[in-house]
Length: 614
Image 1 (cartoon, rainbow, N blue to C red):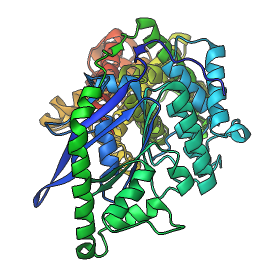
Image 2: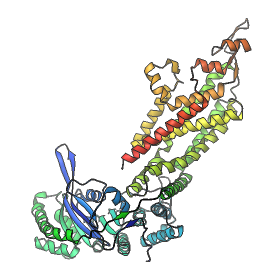
Image 3: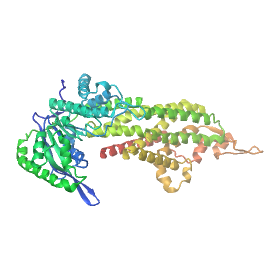
Image 4: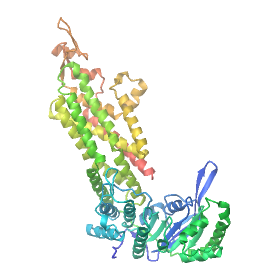
């Protein structure tokens, strides 16, 4: 299979070697600390593959996290490539991590999923080069038959679990990594498929000089033979490290020869598994520790001297690369939203249905003073309840976030590109929902006539729903658990409704709530500007209380100027706004406040995504 040459944003000379020295990791518990990884060392050369085996709780995944800088090793440990000490940033540039969880966009096809990963990593390459690379990976992983099938969603069945696992491996390989970390790459695969996948990875690794380090669970002998080195962990320590033939010799040396017609991996795991009968296994385990320690002491000097002190250079990515990444992410997000009914299809239907309901309930309110509160209810409902419906966006955002976390860990892009692309795509989708709703209700209800007032209503309702949407994303970013995010978002929307100034007038709110959360509430300002846009310039007939002498009692007190101009049986929208004590903020001021809240929420989400890596 002809493989394309790697990109030029890194330089790793031929014969490169990755050395992991004295890696240890502790976690705190109620009894003090527990050591999950204890002084593990290993060297892997370019084109070689290392398999990390061990029983449950042996520290395999923790070790892989330390090697890839997802966890920080304790002082004394070091990770070097070509003699150069690696950091989290340099490792993310030259490596790719394939996790156990297969986090992908369910509505994208297998080919699209791998192709977008390739484009994000190699934005400087042509479409033809990218397509050739994707074809190579799909062919190598045996995905030709399902390349045009969707990954699958809760409402639409997609590829099988084994095929999805190979897609995840493909997204890691397609980015030209120098070091490939694989966490249980054969999970969900039958023995034949597992062997073929590892064979494909080996072929690509040898052709491109990739260092492959994989944790693997109960491999068949055919799969195990594909690895150049085997490391067996037991209670965080190295019980064995070497080739398959070395394993046979080591087992014989401690009086535990491998039985004929028995899987070597199963035999090694039997020797180190202490969950059932630890007292019986401890002498054997100690013998393995001692034998490996002698090998490590003999190899330590030669390993250091064998390292080639070649400097690794990571070129700074140009601005156009970052701009191209935003474009690729935006394109992928548009495709996701267009196909994903749970993202915006259902929500658009909800907005249209809500608009029809409101239009038919509040139809043609007229100009009586008795309907002033009804008109205020329309604006409250439009802001508060439509904002409440933003909770429907939680599942789609959590899916986006999970994909972002995986791709960010692999150094493809950061939170800035993710938020920019999300915002670029969010604006037109949300505007379309707002537009359909506004067109349905505005003239059916009989709100303030005129194109200017309609477009102002549309603009400020859109800003309110936009702020509600980014509030939901902020909460889901902080608490990436669906039920918890749903509960917190519902609470926050209910809280903003309470201090908004509709259920209880703002002037009647306790002073603490009035001077604090009332003025932090985006719904406060959205409700005010919609009410002012509708009522200002309107004149209402006072039909609430008409006495025999012709005098009137209006629902809201008319001002002296109104009485002088229209008599006491009229009340103007200005009188209502004055009675409600709506602030004298200009239209531009409301715009600035809502946009400012939007920017604050977006900035907080950036901080959350920057800090949180899981």
